[in-house]
Image (cartoon, rainbow, N blue to C red):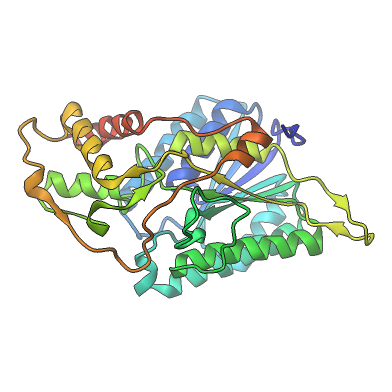
Length: 357
């Protein structure tokens, strides 16, 4: 177990992507559990998906902040690729911990829209690194992705595996983030930790993710496409488990130590955060439909078979994701554990209420 070396109490923390799925849930946890914390959220609130969802999340954070007057919640709207805006942010607040969750997400979207990935995921992350160099922080935590494993045949995926063969631009930008962070950790002694997230799901999630997109289509009576003829497996990870992992990692920055050459070794770590229990897509869809019926999102007599279509693999997709979380367990005594049925039940109940089904 690694002992915590950062006390978050009374600290000022930056969370980029604060209007996003993981970011908003992390801010919620910080406001609820860290006395006297100041959380600055930064997000462009772009229209990659329904902006009303992002506004809903921000509205929920305002409600939580109002219940915790000892904490401060500050939201700043801006673009990560705007270096002047990022510099101004760091000059103003002098952050102790930075959690960079802002990114252009999505594998398939990157095939036709490469520009936005270069802007947000490369230029944007570079701006964060430069700011951490010029305005030193105790710890930089940033989102990577299970996509970096590409089509690796060895499972479960370990952080020790070679990941030099991305199969999508999105994956390439995330691996680039890890390389850039390593270089900055080595050159400027910036403690940094990258987190490879595995298929995150839950209430108020991203509509472009399968569970959310399937639900929208089924409600409209449309056909859902199940790729690779249903033979894909995904390591679905409930959002609360992801946030708990991020929260623990934030408090334990990699130690600054000197190497044999008299130069600092890079204070740099990478971890997987996944459920370590891959689900076959057909089984996943079966569980989802049961929970949608149970919650009343869909009628009990819904003909699911008439609304399913098995189709080939799509470019950029991989057949399986499967996290080896042994490093996370060893260093933090934690591993994600929420069963898929439980997580999808929470999603279905939220969906019913949010969309007034």
